[in-house]
Image 1 (tube, rainbow, N blue to C red):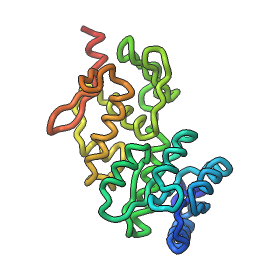
Image 2 (image 1 turned 45 degrees about the horizontal axis):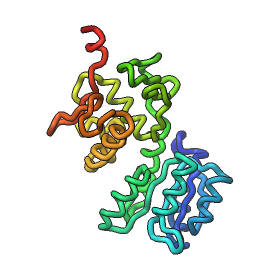
Image 3 (image 1 turned 120 degrees about the vertical axis):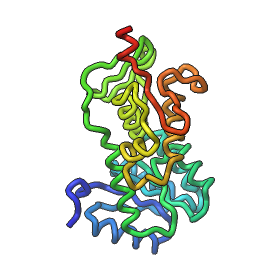
Image 4 (image 1 turned 90 degrees about the vertical axis):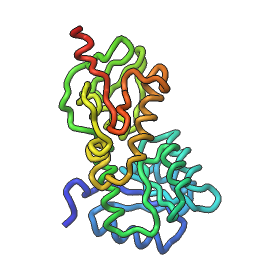
Length: 241
């Protein structure tokens, strides 16, 4: 039986190989997803506008426009979660995809169970964390956060965070003053399926620093505890001093 949180979730599958599309579609529909197809970048962008999918599966290797070009165009108009489908061993492809705004990647060949697991994990992240912290959090005069409203204010201006960046910030701020290990971050933000993917943490910590820190090379909010993990500045203690 399909999981309750999967039913009616729309997945846009973008791949120029018809056999691969058919294989993925059958398995995802069996798991309760609604699947639409696109066989090139132009079709994918049109489907995105017309159908507003909950998630996009995007193959890297396609004629005309490759997956990276399509991803860049998607990110200009939407923050929809994107999982890249990459060839085995193409580490550069995976890193490039993440840097361009992909939420995850799955390496071919993959099992239907692995793909479904990754999709569910990305959808969980896109929903954001449950709001355990209420009201406006004033970190300092530069940075203010309202998790109830999903708003981050920096020097009086709204900062746009992608769902994974927002979820990561939430867990860091929730544990302000405490060191959160790499494994804890992976489990809380990405899910236990990602325990062997420590590079995700480093990459997204860097994304947050680029968006929030005055000098990302000398961070004041998100501090590195070498060999252990990361710590968000204890703003509550500083206010009390």
